[in-house]
Length: 514
Ligand SMILES: NC(=O)C1=CN([C@@H]2O[C@H](COP(=O)(O)OP(=O)(O)OC[C@H]3O[C@@H](n4cnc5c(N)ncnc54)[C@H](O)[C@@H]3O)[C@@H](O)[C@H]2O)[C@@H](O)CC1
Ligand SMILES: Nc1ncnc2c1ncn2[C@@H]1O[C@H](COP(=O)(O)OP(=O)(O)O)[C@@H](O)[C@H]1O
Ligand SMILES: [K+]
Image (cartoon, rainbow, N blue to C red):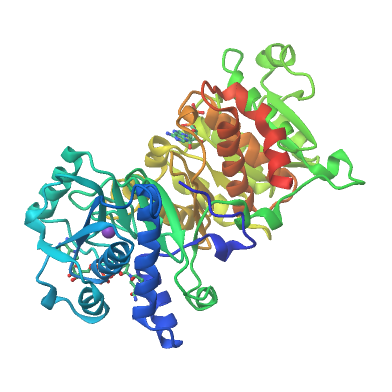
């Protein structure tokens, strides 16, 4: 997926639901720019990308057959504009239309009338001699699963092995949720307009889009002030202004003291992964709170990270008297049970930040309300005090009903979980969603499949903790941690294991601060 420029503010990285995109079109048209102008720009942008896929104008593009598949709505209209543009540039184009072109209406009818090339019924498409398929069947208007004729057509394209360029969305993909409605094209490239949609980033949608091109077609960004979208792609533009960084005359305590709870003697590695990442990600001091039996194991393996004994609620209460301890990671390798519940409650009651992961989450499986009630009562100025970092299995333990509700997208589900729990919820995976109880949500887009490996989630908690301990607002801290984690994996490349991630943070910071 091509990365949009690291731009100035959250609206530069906004994602628009299909309904919000329709509002953007409507507001633009009401402002005096016609729908035909928008469709013309959209279709020409598609033609430009098609030429690039064919090898560029005047290059391999001439004399190659391009099949433009046109649907019954404006997505089809874009396809007709693209077809006419390519035809005028000397490309051999045929439009295959779902319906008789005199049944088209509005801007799509105008685009079809302006097209001077040949039109055939959809059923005539075989894929023979075709170098590129432009998919203009359905975009934002998809309202039900594709019928058998179109599902078969997609299979024909797949069998023929022809590259696919999707207009707006690969047909069959829901722009709101990223779900496949019946069957969907798997595109090599997708051209969308103005701002991307959640379905371009949520799986399985993302895997169906190929490289995503976002083209500007004349919609003014100020319509976003009216629409006020609440979902974003997780890029630095979303949180860069809130990020905590060392200041020239700073002291280590200004940079926050982070704490990670260690598990018992045979289960200490996860906590050390988190602690090492927290220190490298910018916390001024990091301490491992260790049960007495694990102190020697921990002390033998850390240097800059400190180790303190913490064996029960009395010890923790004593530690919490030190107001310099800002943010706590609880869960990696910790063990499931009452101790985790008691510590979590104590930390939240003390008004500190808590990142609850792994065993910490599972400890509340039978009584999530205990945790949620505590978190809902404690939100501070910078947002909630609690960050939950579940993978799908852990999410199901805390929010079984939300996990089971098939009509919810991953974005919806994470948002509902955040509202219910009073926490910033980080629902992990290739398409990690970060949601705050105030309705803001971000979908992460970086990282590599090498992250699907033991211990990488522990490292993530440390990266989030580093920002929280330094005073970054909770949602922004979680988003920044997730992005840094993904970027570190990209910088390392293949062969990554959890231990390698923190070592990439200096290169990540150099790039981010450049
Ligand atoms: N002025 C605008 O609104 C602009 C719209 N644009 C394009 O317009 C598209 C949206 O256009 P529309 O709202 O017309 O929607 P679509 O063109 O995506 O499809 C709508 C039509 O498909 C039918 N339909 C939906 N699901 C179906 C299914 N499973 N099987 C059969 N028929 C189905 C609907 O009944 C409707 O007739 C965008 O995706 C984008 O490509 C661009 O031209 C930019 C400007
Ligand atoms: N296919 C993938 N592509 C990108 N990131 C992934 C993928 N699979 C998992 N991840 C990321 O890797 C991390 C795994 O965390 P988690 O499941 O908690 O593992 P562990 O408990 O072993 O640390 C998460 O940050 C998750 O988002
Ligand atoms: K399409």
